[in-house]
Length: 358
Image 1: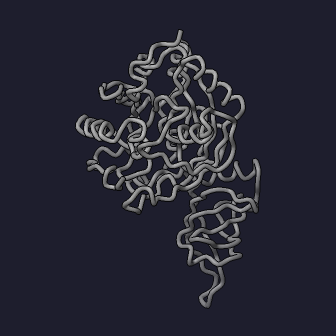
Image 2: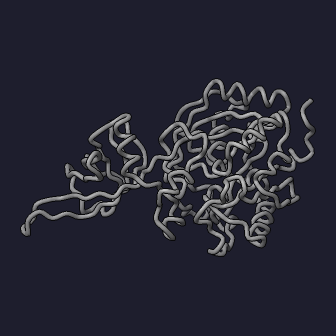
Image 3: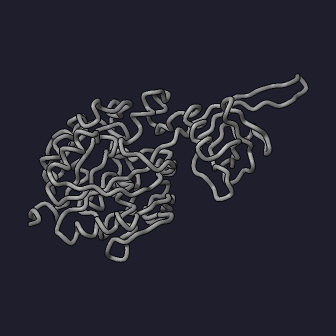
């Protein structure tokens, strides 16, 4: 298939720069097969049923954007320059890979100071990224980073406004636990405690998996034939407990519904053999039309960028033409798009007429 098959025109005014408040008051487009319904997120209680299981990504976004200074001696004396850093992921040698601006101005071995308690030395450079060794680790590093860093808002939001104190809460799920993501699993941002309690009271159950969302989630597809695209890899974990819970739901006839494309990609990675199993490692699974879903029966997700791998994923679940219809409807009805935008519940035709489990 061609990249142009996943393109659409989006009015810039529909790009959300702040989330709905409260979280669960966002709009919800329900695609029940080819039928489209306009609801709000709290209406999930009308569409989910006893025996369904939501799969939730419990990754925690780190405040990965840092502003610092480097200082060096020159003919004019001591001079300082501002340096902007976006942390990407920890490396096996104890350093962090990072985007550094301007990277060409920083020398290997040079120190960047972010705060009184946080600094880093540029250990090496590879593939356009710097590898930073920080002055602290463990809980001390977490505390210093939380004090000095800002949330790594997606480029389409950061271009409109800087991150602020509200984003520390807004860009984090209520169940975030495992630190390591530099982007949020954004469909999960719509859930709050009252909604979770209402779903549980209805008999919906929850399983937690971890996929640390990387900056690669925002990388554009640069090939015309999507078969030539190379996916970025992200670390994930499906525990034995989560795999057991998901398998039990499938066996009982319930639906397994990942919240977000990250959770979906992870459970389909763990289910490649035909059934869900415990799994840990780096996944670069690339889901495009024609993919056979082994685990996920439906999907809750936000609205995605044109010509993105996530548009390909939702097209794989619902069908390319159906997704085009969904997005045309969403634009016409002025749904809010992307990370802080509204949500959709995508139920494939194969699940549309499925009966409640007995």
